[in-house]
Image 1: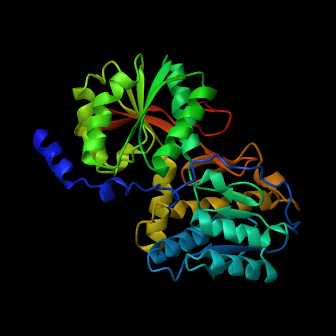
Image 2: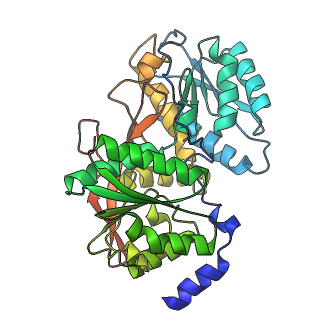
Image 3: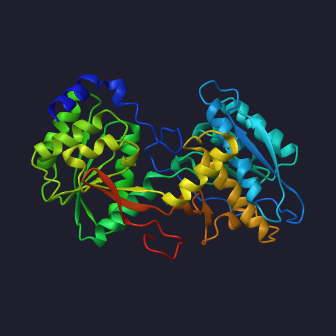
Length: 394
């Protein structure tokens, strides 16, 4: 273990620490909670006629072209599933630019689009939504940045608040009362901290202490060593760090070494640890909790996508499938208001690639998540993802 940790520390740099991505959205969110109220309006349609949906993706963006391809593929795969509903999918290239996204969004509406799916990044989605707000057209972006949501702009990407709520609700049921938060002192870390604080408050759990760490080897190590003293009385430790970040091995070794025994203190992760199973061998991973989507549904989507296109889908591709699934489900109900904010935020939600999800009145979303743990270097599901919003976990 010491040799592994030494290698990790040598490899770690500020750049590596800062590279923790937000898996579902490619965004760096604003720490301030600026989410507003989503609009209730939208265009009326004839559900018996073809419905034009605009897909805004960064086709000519050299850094995101492959993602754009997979998003389009997933959207077309979802269209094949629709029964009695005809979707006319029109694809527009944003090039990853806010200005071009705004132009393309307006062009799409001028050419008959009744709703917009995409764009990929939060700041680009904002520009697209602004361009068509005066025409009452709603935008279902692939972002997970909840601070941009509201008005005619919705986010489909899984949010930190959703994950934190699921885990804090589960923690409360298990008798946890006091949580310490360890987070990177950058925008994603601060955003994660805020989500945990809000989730703890709404679930009746006290925040016993908060320990940020600077983006350096020494900073991570010192913060992990000092967390116990910074959070006396904590019965759980919530870690915001992305599982793929080079800081995680240091955290999962140093916290137990510093007296925070995983057998006595519950470790909780804000991101999916199963994407980096090498972490399971570290002392702090044993017994830790994290969330993940409905695995059977996610695997089914991946298998169908691979069969149709000959390769595995990008992790974000399912968001395009989900968007089409939601639109199709509402049109299938025969609703002339299917594309309005009122319809999109129906409480029953929709079935997507990772299970049940719904759009909320503030423009964010809620997704059914399973709670998992690590036992003997293997992932084990503790509490399955609910199949509906009447199930456990909501």
